[in-house]
Length: 280
Image 1 (cartoon, rainbow, N blue to C red):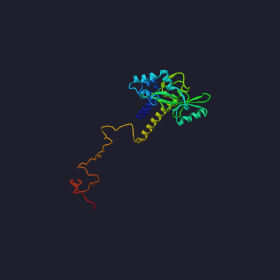
Image 2 (image 1 turned 135 degrees about the horizontal axis):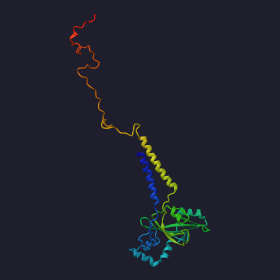
Image 3 (image 1 turned 120 degrees about the vertical axis):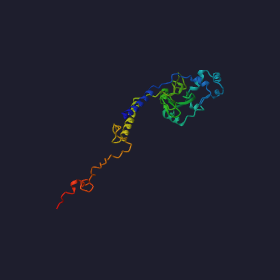
Image 4 (image 1 turned 180 degrees about the vertical axis):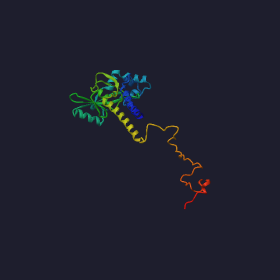
């Protein structure tokens, strides 16, 4: 049945979407972002634009190496600094509001950076903020004012990065000024299909199929049937119907409704017609 096939097609497409989404994961090969940073010709929001003046990646790397060891450039990029001690720290109003809501008037706000490689290959130094309470409670804040408990929470819920972007950041991203392990991970965790999401997509597919079936039935003629005109004795439905055949009476028969005793009817020509007695 055609309508049934349409329903199956819609639901099948929904299931295929689920399968393709469930199979998505992090890219297999992680880049060396610190090395790429040292060699890059351009970096958005760079803290060290003076290193970009050399014409080749090797020359730019040599410039960085002449001033910093890998550990030093890593710390310089990723360490947190107090905003009241940093001339360049000018958080947006949304960041200040989020910090005040969390830490109160006695809290401290820090700025730190993470190194980002976008999906298109471009590099960026992305500023984030850490609000700390006097009792050492800490909260990560991005430049839109959204807040996160830790690095994994940031990767799962941020709206700034995608799963095809890479970040280079401290594992303990709310530590100040910064210590511990540094990792290269995707900027966003792959989407995880929840049971409610799976059920919602399947239900949407079923409802779409039912709607198609309903519309087809609504458009069907009440005389529509699962058969076709027989051939070849009947004309096609879109051809004019020929006029019905009317037989012509033979000459030796009286025409319809003609009286037999009228002249020319053939009865007066009989031999005994003149000798027939008349009434009265």
